[in-house]
Length: 510
View 1: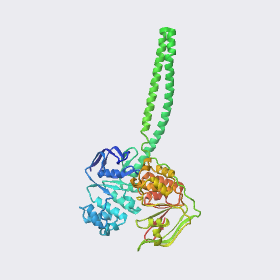
View 2: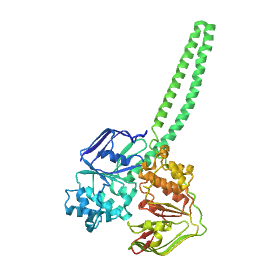
View 3: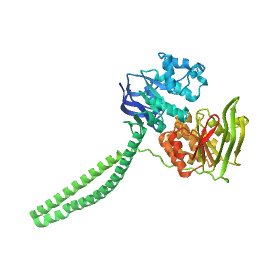
View 4: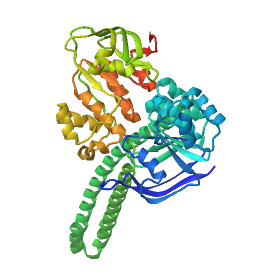
């Protein structure tokens, strides 16, 4: 195995006053399964692009391996999948391609279908297989789980656990735990690498944060005590110095040379008082310097708030044997469930099972109203706040978005600040936001809205771990009625009161 060496790496985007990286130096072993963590906007994707040579930077990056980036671009999606994979890994044999796809639970017939006809999850798996067939390359995997259902995430995690030589950007805790053996973390003040999976890193960070907070409190008390002692010593020193210059001089005039003893006494006492004051000031300064080295990596994750409306009836929505069609294709059938006030229902199931379509139907998407069989009963005057799966449409200024959505600007920005937005971000065009930052904009808008029901379609896509935990705590504290689709297993297990597993011909309620 070889090393990837980074020395004094410094980078900032053109026109930005803030560095993404500043004199950062560290090493990565090419045999690692390296998980890459950090809050949204900290530069994870930027770092991968620096390794790929897509930006100019200061410092040095040296490596004896070639880098491949996931997701790689497919220029002609009308090609058969086999042709796409052979263009990615030209030296791979057919049997090797088939073997990799079988590990990822992709049917062999997908090779002979146009790539564009594969589901998003199948495309993700196929591209991963193709890139890993380039055996001498180091793979940079950027958020592969965003198009994977829960079962596919487990399959891909098992696949990656059998590989080595990659950096994996993901915020899915269970996914990272299943397939990485080291963690690279971009913190507020530095970059660190530890051996272990996500849980190992998280436990270590929690211990370090708790230690630093305890030390900080201890040093605050020490600094206060030293300040009081220094003030008292200063007063004593001034008093003795005054006695030396005043009373001591008078004694000399009255008693002649015998006053020299008094003068020496007051001089020595003054010297000791001055030395004591200097020692206290030095100890105080040392304590201040030690304190200044603490808490630099403490992440601010303030509690979020939501003000849901109370509906006049316990029952909000009923679906009875609902089937949805796109043209001649049936995307789901016989969907039946009731959503009551206080429920937090997770719609689960494979890609293409109709989860997002059901959410859009309830939200009144006019494109679906002619494609429905069965009964959909929605409470009258039911106020719904909807977060769509896709956030790429966000463009323009934040101020214009606030005005178009008719939301409270102060509240909206306060929520974004709690979700780790800097004030500088408020002045940027939203097209320059990271994918995670765009999703936070949609979530913040939803949290500003008073609603009876919150419908969220994959709200955690691209969202960092800290913000995921904030949202979990919010839901558990305020208990809004929520209908959501999410593939983060930890999130679903923590907040869902019911899970509806959608399959092709039936639903299972857990």
